[in-house]
Length: 374
Image 1: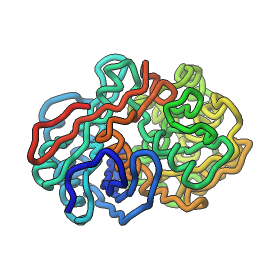
Image 2: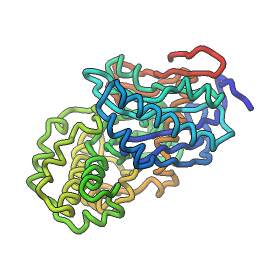
Image 3: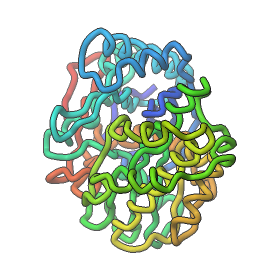
Image 4: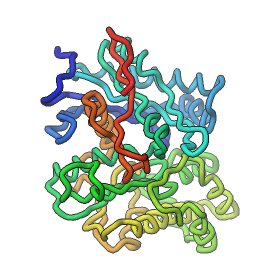
């Protein structure tokens, strides 16, 4: 099989994502030249066990130490087990697991050693996607927007639209598909909208011992506490001009705002907070989007989707409506970014992370060569 990545032509890349929801690892094959999408390949999912989730939660917000080392081992072994299910690919895009994100102070930390994975797999691995962006003054997140731009062109979009990812944290990408390149000024605007599934999942895990609100059944029985919602929206984050990003636990006080509420009312209120953050974010778009395409676990929550539909002045649909896979879009994104890094193309720009200039950062590790920082 071909191992060297040529300067041009289609590359078969395997991308993976382990998000802030801490549910597991997604992996997917993408065929791309680093600009356009040629096609989608097989995908798979490897859930974290309850024990593994506890290890990861125990390391959140930490930058070093035994807890981080334990989390690193969980992440590396889970990814290796998942990657071994695939055999026909040229290189890997490995994001790792974000444990801490404070780009304005300490930086950003994604654990998992891509060089170790490269040796274990015998394939090139592209990793550490965020550090170069942060070093150049960027937020280091979100990083999927360049792939969203390619997706918009792939589905034949002609009007501005929004890709909304609702994982542990919510983030949106405004795409103007009339531009030719993602890094052009005005082609993209991206930022975190606020907490998404993480606070609700944490609340339900603590109170009821369940991982998430399946089909929004708990929230549907509740009533939104308007006072708590207003306090949430008073947070300074929502008045900041994007690009901007969040750590998973930046809004941990949300739990305190609903602490006195019954389970259903607390779930309804946290769900409404997610939708309200998105509605606030949409106001920053340069033009009203023609549609909002939702990806990530939040699209499976009908209560959240209904709240979004009421809050926004355009159609809100799961990305499956346009033929994309909302469960694997982030994994596909890192396959796409890996090819761009390997070919020296930018992966972020001022409109996506606030970085001073378009940058394509990352480390390319080969099983037979010294690591190359790009």
